[in-house]
Length: 408
Image 1: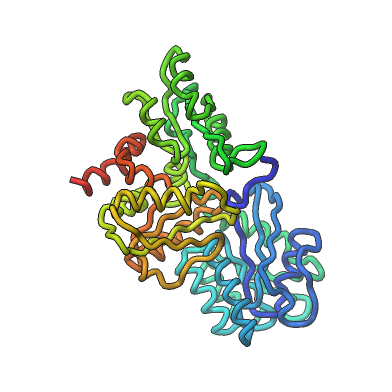
Image 2 (image 1 turned 90 degrees about the horizontal axis):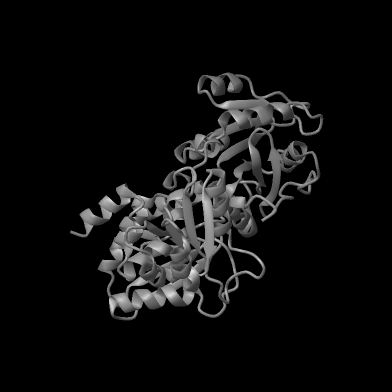
């Protein structure tokens, strides 16, 4: 892995009406031509992303969006894509130019409801000052605001300073994957199957990130395939402090790992890192309430081409069907797509979300909670359907307590 994954970057969305200079502002902040600009309203159609390093924040991702006020059938589609960006933005820059109305107020209010920090950028300040009284009102509400000109460069430094001030604490002090589960100098045995779906010449993102996290926390890693785990453990002078497996190999790894050694999966680690482990555990327990004919949505964050025994399209449906004892109706989606209406589903099974940022996963959990639809993730669903979830939750006492209480 050379570049920081998108899901680990601070994602900064740029929103506003058409022709207020959103794309020009992005180009000015990035110091390069990222988005196409013109005097024609609606030049930006699809969201434009620019990954860059911004010290001291580190890796960030700017997302330029189409005007939220776009019109017509095509405009509505553009607005829909811009609103999808709202679901994953860690910080929002709301751009205005020469005016401020209920439109901008409502946009700011939406981000406040989502608990997304907002910076108001009054662009084109070389042509017109912000409306009288608006700056004072924003200051009274303690909302960050900057007068800026993408043309002259005025306020660009202040935009960067504002981003540092409002960056969410969970990004600045990002969580650990296994660091808190291992003592300094501890050993994690990572079980990494190499099959048809393993990317050629490299490991998948959760595996790479887990290795790096262990090293960052002064721990050791032993990386083996599932067939070599038992022999590797026999060669150790002392047992590892933790075994982490790909969820697809849960049964074999559980059989080869002594009961005294904590065991979990990469997917369960990411349930904690990217979302809310307790909520996702409750979702896994709801598998016990599924009945033949129920509809189950399987959601994947990345858009890969499925081959062979694909985990989301073949293995999980097979395990859940065997557990339920009858056919379930499975639907699948990938990437940024997520249904507005979740009511038809009895369960949503999500991937680990390694390419999502945490805010985007939490947004999906919130939508499921509002709809009253349980949601879990791949690793938790597999462990529950195979009857080993209690053991897989051993490293997480709080989640384990929820499991035991719900399953009494």
